[in-house]
Amino acid sequence: MIRDMIASFKAYWEAWTIIVDKKLWLYLFFPGLISLFYGLIVGFSAWYWSDNLKDLVFTVLPSDSDSRIWNKISSGIVGVGIATTGVVLYKYVILMILSPILSGLSRRVEEAVVGYSISYRKETDETVIKDYARSVQFGLRNWIKEFFFTVAVLLLGLIPLMGYIAAPFIFMIQAMYVGFSTLDFTLGRYFSINGSIDFIRKNLGFSLGNGIAFMLIIMIPVVGLFFAPSLGTAAATLKAVPRIYRPSFA
Image 1 (cartoon, rainbow, N blue to C red):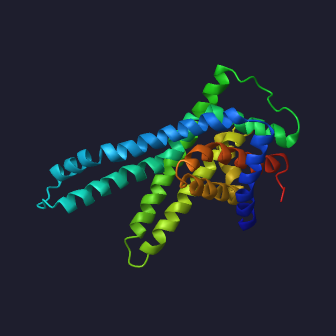
Image 2: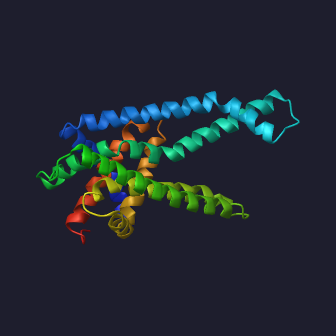
Image 3: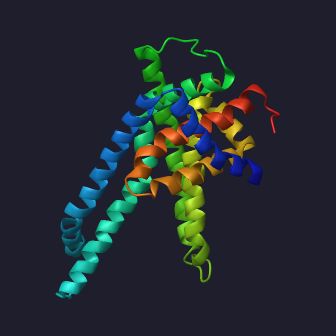
């Protein structure tokens, strides 16, 4: 598993090389711009709505403090809460919105790996809709499971001494499920959703490694948001294709 995780990290550089060599710039820039736009919306919302939401919270839970310092701190806490929620939802919102484009990128990368065209079906409006519907279904499934496990870890973190491991576990949970989503852009051409889940379980190291790299990249201001969706998808394709063609590939 550790070897698969390390291979997934290295695949990000390989993904960049293929994008450059094959001149897949549209698959990089268009998702990148949409991802940046989403990030700007989250950032603006955290700044603009922090005071309003703070007042709403104090309406429900009144505070006796009129301290300016307390007001600034509480606004900051609300703003951080909005930003954190935006980051948590980012991987699902962006990957679902961009699913037709990222599925196309995955197809182009796979063609570069196998050396011949695998576009056996026409990319019509119908197939784009099917790709999008699958992405939404898969994304909602992952979000529900991630939410359940995250809440369980948060509750576990209330136990003395267990709080120290809650944050790393939550990060790993988020990484695992974003890895699921990026891999499915490739797996969707070959498997049903249940088939994809079975494939991912057998290759969990690839999923976790890809997700960890993805999460670390989006933490880089501006640049990370721009590159993460396309690089994550291309890197996942590079690791999934050999296992699809040769399941016993090591």
